[in-house]
Length: 135
Image (cartoon, rainbow, N blue to C red; front, top):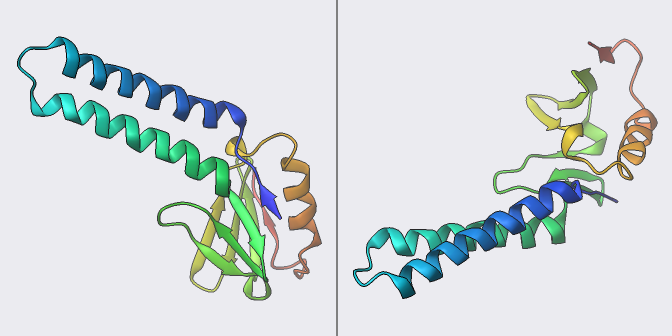
């Protein structure tokens, strides 16, 4: 099961990447004296474009083989059977398993995937005394 990013976030990374690439290519072709910063534009463009491709392929949160994982460079992963409690704070979910916590920013999740996330969290078998809700 995958919880998808909002398309707005994905397209923003794509547009920013294209703009950086255009700046880089134009600075290399139209400047007689190229500088190291001209290559920095190209590097930034490639970084944003690769973020777009990675986020499109792997999405925000995935659940496979009993593990919930945030698909990021240093993303957190938790075993589903080790999750002891969750909190809802300012619209975001915080899943806790021992000393590890997984923060799920609901503003980044697509509106089609958000009900699935809420259904998944409500389906977790947690004791009512472990569940905390803050507004």
